[in-house]
Length: 241
Image (cartoon, rainbow, N blue to C red; front, side, top):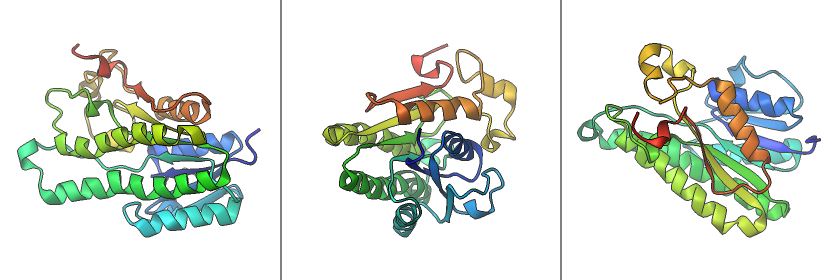
């Protein structure tokens, strides 16, 4: 049913990104997978429906390259998943300007460069499209002891921009949503104590990659949902527990 659809997935070499790429492949999409070393990833199968593009998403040239390859190989861009991101915790007063610039380059500028290219292409195609970006519940619902203020400047920027882009291009049928995962069982947390991670949601759960993948696929294919933030966080955004 989706033979003609093409999706771009950033941060696609492992974890959530690879899971998203594989889910869309299974649903019949063409997938353009990008990350710094996605050509080496063994988590995504080789297929004539997969284009791998190595590059740093913070570099505008990567976004141009990704979109050009998508169009050359598959002829259209129907969906984008902005999954690439970096994240580190520090007390607010200990973050450096360099820390901020690293976070902003990957999280915010990476989102900006690629989303602009994709929206331009979707407008030219005149057939709408979907953009889903990965953020976090911590943007609007901080947790005491999880000190990520400057990282949230960048992730919060994606959430705010997504809602505004959703309104700006609603008449063109371009839907823009975000998925806000809580703690997910990925390589990012391999050294963190599981008992502590479970305390970071009222349900006391750690999400699987599949939980996040399912949310991304749902929003990509939900025809009347735009400007939404879908929390997949065991209720962490609800408040104190």
